[in-house]
Length: 371
Image (cartoon, rainbow, N blue to C red; front, side, top):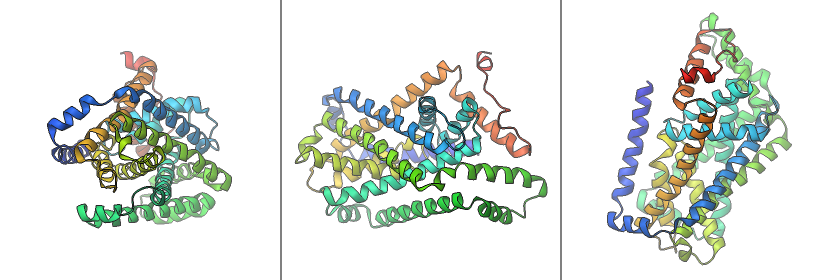
């Protein structure tokens, strides 16, 4: 099953990357990459690291009803989680991140995983809101028609359906947090067919899942979560803008505000598309979607090869620093990603076999990695 997931993820990446690069002129692409001014990469990556800080602040709010953990301690856990997502398919990095948090801070793995899932829903809703905000103020009139002409209306309908799906999911999570007892009773009723020996374990895990949602019980906390979510994506959009200067994309817009609005739009659409579990780091899907949105926006005149070069560097700036930084954190903690992933899998299997599984039973010891 795990090998199948890996091959499926890699297959999706390869398919999209082949389409991505074959639709560009190779020599022009190489020349464009060679002539780019990469000095803008450094502040761009700095902005991305700041966005991770806002993620740590937001996660602190999501977890404070379980345990107060300083954002400075959550920051390396977020980085390791992103590193794992960039290297593992099907967003398995989320499991690694929840396990790593549990080992460092003693938080239930199941509750941590639910808080991460809630993060993803918040991200999707904020990205959708950014799209809605940017469209009236950016030169995208006719973008829908252009996209439909080149790729058919199915993509637009899929986008609308996905936005509606995330909204419904958030509402369900909200009501589950408001009425945890009723929610637990409902799920226990649904799983009545499960053998009785597994019922205590299932009931325990359902309770922990609901515990990960308790931050949604207060409206002021929900408002704070959304407030912290916006700078996460505005900082990432800033990376898009700065790397745009590396390739002279600023010459395609009337002013910096117009360019910023377009880049926020591209950031939002590309990240929503690549959030679907599949290839590691969304490789292939992210590049293709980001480029197509960028070049189809009217009045910019950005050609496909320039868009290919630009988006390739943008995604590399998003992936590589997290991979290197995450590896450094694990090295300082005397842990390898391979062992962390295997330990998280072993923990999940053990919890499925033992009703009285203790969340603190599988601690990572630095001595084990030295053997």
